[in-house]
Length: 275
Image (cartoon, rainbow, N blue to C red):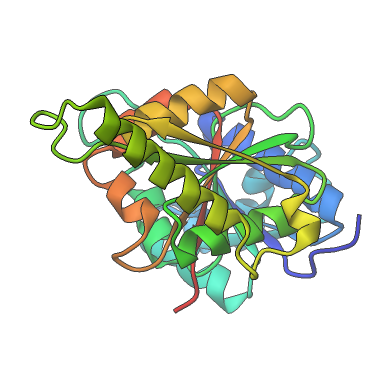
């Protein structure tokens, strides 16, 4: 496979829960023939902070092969900000991170490191949940028909040219509690399908990608539709697009964040549309 040119940055806190992210990043760097950069933000006042050689040796212990030809970056300061700044300064094409614990309220990745990186990094952010056993084979792209959804789709197709891609759009009947007519529901369903069809036929989506696509609409709340579709198509990667305060991801990162990210078992790629 041709190189994607830009390097991959993977963040680790040196704990076992970061191993899956490091393993996936290592696999992708090999697939894409690109440089892997491993970053660990050192604790302030730790012995490693004043000994860069020792810090590199410790960070290398999380690699599948500690002697691998990768770049090691012992960072300093706030972990989320340092990850974003490092990715920008090194012009990385992808940031890979693992999930934090879900032991109690406040101890989950939305609202902490991953949330900050997703909101502030310009590079796509891959949140790894599953142990990698091979390349991604089936990608689910959640779309609201916006330009950021289209950008997320195009990015996913570029990064993973050999994977099948399935588009899904969640819809619902407005004022359903008052409008119980089957005709109304049927009309809304037809409109939702027509909008998805128009999105697929957009001139910005090349024919070479269109032939790789399948698509469906799902009735209900977004997180439920996405979860059901992941199981239905056997997706091993979910892709969401975001752009500032608009687009698909901010709506998800709000009230639905915990349920969506708990429910969807597979890895998730967050793609931010350029401003």
